Amino acid sequence: MKLEELRKRVDLIDGEIVKLLGARMELALRTGKHKEGVSDPKREENVFANVKKHSIGLVRPEFSESLFREIISESKKTQDRHPVLVAFQGEHGAFGEMAIRAFLPSAVPISCHEFEDVFSGVESGSFDFGMVPVENSIEGAVTQVNDLLVETGLKIIGEVRVPVHHCLLTLPETDYREIKVAYSHPQALSQCRGFLQRNKLEGRPFYDTAGAAMMLAEDRPRAAAAIASRLCAELYGLEILKENVEDHKSNSTRFLVLSRKDEGDGNGQGAVGKKGDKCSIIFSTEHKAGALFSILKVFSDANLNLTRIESRPIKSDPGKYAFLLDFEGSDKDARAAAVLSQVEKMAQFYKYLGCYESWKQEAKA
Image (cartoon, rainbow, N blue to C red; front, top):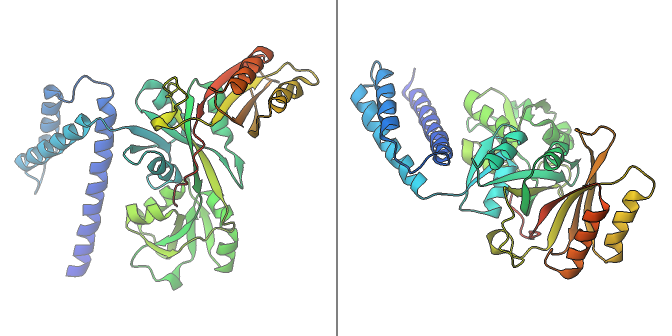
């Protein structure tokens, strides 16, 4: 094997080591939510004994212990800063992570496999907040998230709208003329159908856009590319062959920030000190003609503008539906507060999700 090829392999291994260190730091921060203080001498000694036991060949036990003492020292320093942990669904580089960076740049984004993991992690206190997509301007509602909003007791404390701009990403050594396939989430492939057809590329479904980029960087398949965000190119060492390959440039996703409790201060101030100007509720009505109309008329009579209404079946009560409704206004405003009180009395089931700032600043893709 030539020197240059050996160095390339070393670089790849170095990249993997750094990514694994990042993943370990994330887990250390999560464990910090479940223990008193940042020091646990007994646990640390177990770690040192374990790494020494697994040190074989060229890796001396003394070197492993010294290395992990530094890693644990850095982990404790990070825990001691008590950063805000915000969970999102998908691999690092997903649009959910971009929404977190826009909402709270100092936060630490934590990757979760499923939406349920985000909700349960926020409920249990493992995460400070969760960032979940609720609707896309082209694909419509994210039904799984809406169902979880109905089923759980979490509050909404903010929203971020992320413009969805896809990039065609390749390995640095790839000749663009050899590319035959592009991996991505089925929804992203659908949003880039025209680009794929024009360039005679086969779209191959993958579980996640960012996951496709990560796979490309790790497995390095020949004649392949990934469709994902610009952030993925930065995180996984990929090159951007073409930007904005989506068919509709106005495509965007609205994300909600979830919390265990209303982050307001009692004076109409929402998350991060911003005044709330949008409210969200969930309710159900009697199964009779005009029941839904009667509730919607309350908003109309008060001249409150509805920005979204979705219906979802109530899984615990087959045949009945819950309505998720957003409207412009503050719960500290007497008119809006009166409407909320009236709707609560009229509805069979009622849940107040929160009053939060309708974010005007968009996350950059």
